[in-house]
Length: 106
Image (cartoon, rainbow, N blue to C red; front, side, top):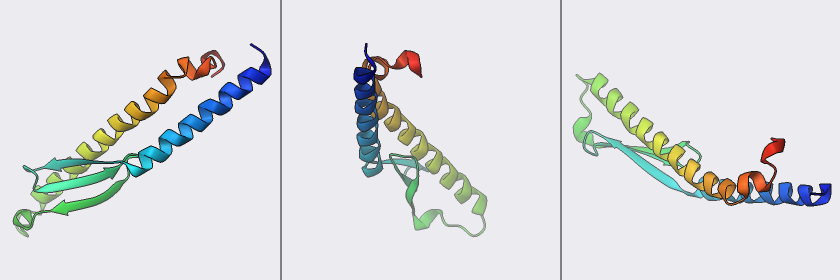
């Protein structure tokens, strides 16, 4: 393989990766806890976009329970975002035959 072809493959891989990352930035996933009483929404890149808390779980006498529910919902949302990333980025990389023939270089 000549160097020009190699460079074109690298540029194509970089462009496809950037496109996949743009798609991820637009996607969202949800994680919930307490039978949906607390819901966290994460963007495809894993950042938390919002958290919804049902008023019925807000108990000043049991703040620890609410903290646990928020933590669980955020963790689930981030786990789902990671799965989404693996799916989106994996399809890009898998479709290029291991970096478009560049796998041995990286």
